[in-house]
Image 1: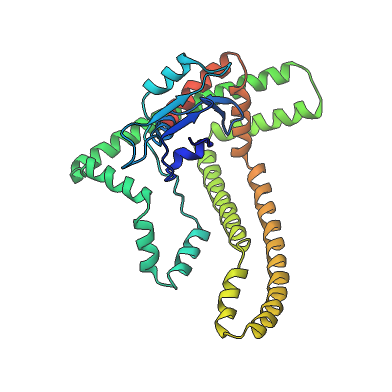
Image 2 (image 1 turned 45 degrees about the horizontal axis):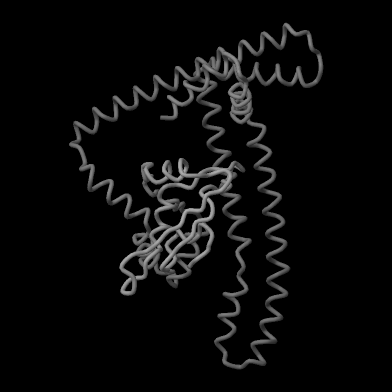
Length: 312
């Protein structure tokens, strides 16, 4: 009998005659209690039955005050969602792969080619053969026009919503700092939304500072990687344990002080870039849009579908 957490569904090679699932729900990343996904339940149940030893395996679903037969049936008969790779390339990953290959790019490329993300990409290309140049051009043109239309519709709804909010703020007669700040944000957002040139300029500047912020974060992540193990590997090649201890301590102190200074400087740069991003008009527009979405009124009901269509 195996009692374990949901980690058992991750593919751990731990077969047993019987598995016992004591709860059909767990707390998710959003803080809410959600039922287990069908794929996870089937994976855990599939651990029952030892190859070459058992002809059958038994899985016991324990009823709780919150989950019973109905919830169990709902999970079992639901559609199994496809697995999607969460592979996300980054600068630290690239550096580590190159270091692992001793500076050889082919080693790093071979490791990436073995990833699940590349397998997914190959499957998509195999199931969807490439179109001819003409078909590709027509498809891209139609897609671009459709996406552009949906984006324009969303921006129009957003502009109307901000204009209504600005009128309400002005009509309220509230002269507090918060009200004045809100009015300035709405006026600035409307100035951008109603000007194609202003929208293009703001979009370029936001993309630029966002990339700069990500570069600074990637650099910080690289600096925070512990390099003591690499230093130890280099020093450990001498074969003299006494000398290794002396040099290891000497270089560790120097490297630690240097790394801490560089990391502190980089943290300041990240904070500076983050402030620039937070003060950008696009960031303020996102905050205003989220606030409108959270309101249970006509504005929120209009923005939600328009945003979903633009994202699709």
